Length: 245
Image (cartoon, rainbow, N blue to C red; front, side, top):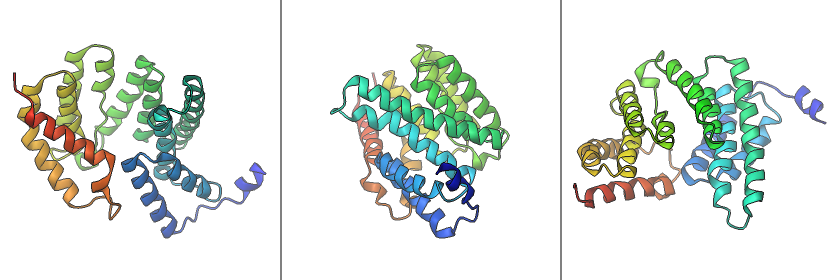
């Protein structure tokens, strides 16, 4: 049956399906509803040869399900959570390796492998993959760069000085108006109780946030009601109200 499916695959993916996949992934990531996105992606992946960007999104849906959503399923025992998480991490890992075999310079696949290693608490391996992704990113035009949050690995390893250095380096290396890099840095300052530094970058964070999401970058997917946007607003309010000392 699998061979028959593979044989019948075609690379001619209609534009309306690409748009459906775009909307499905946008909704899934903004609302942490990964299973719904996976069902749609898997349906079309059986029929079409996915472009690497879409294949990467399927990998992301798998690993986000494993890393985020499954851990929140309180009806599952710890052992059941671990087994289910391992299953989807492996599916994601296989996809990223397929992408790298096809496109060796596709930085997002290396970042995905690092995300999986990070979830498995294999931090040296995480740094290896994420540094590879960062080096590839630096070869791209600034407008195509984005947040990688390598500092988060050093943070988990307890090296806060190196973590801050990485967050700042990423902020400088990416576009000045990139929301992800400044938000990651602000979250780091909150987690490490460096409120004075968080307050210092807060005006820039708010300015970029208001500009970026005023455009409705997810095109009518009710992003303003998503848990992600809610968490950003809560972070901004918390920093505003927090004493500087």
